[in-house]
Image 1 (cartoon, rainbow, N blue to C red):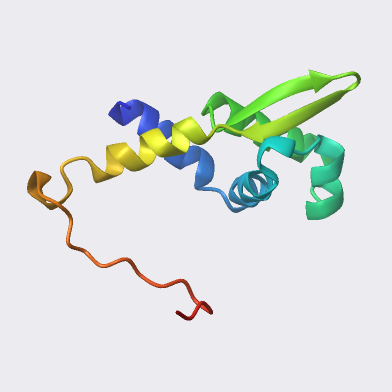
Image 2 (image 1 turned 60 degrees about the vertical axis):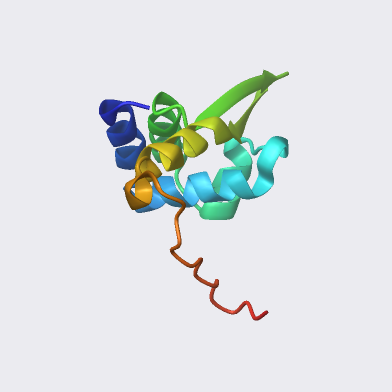
Amino acid sequence: MKNNDAIEVLLALGQESRLNIFRLIVQRGDKGLTPSQLIEKLGIPNATLSFHLKELSNAKLLVAERQSRNLIYRPNPQVIEDLTDFLMDNCCQGQACSTPKLKKKGVSS
């Protein structure tokens, strides 16, 4: 991933509604969601949702598949993996990273 690609992805996710849309679609995984399902779950007006889906798709975070009369939006996990690799490139000066993983809130071990 190049700097410009990372910037495009981060800008797409840097807006609350788009982040919420993306996270909801990620939760559904390969099943994906239709725009009408997203409207129902998030209460976003159709025109606004269309704009946000276009932005997320342009950043290659989502892939859309037409099934009959519906579009199904699914996450593109490769882009997130590429972004993570890009951000972590040369972490710890190329040595094995010794930074401990943080525990998620509400999760006990």
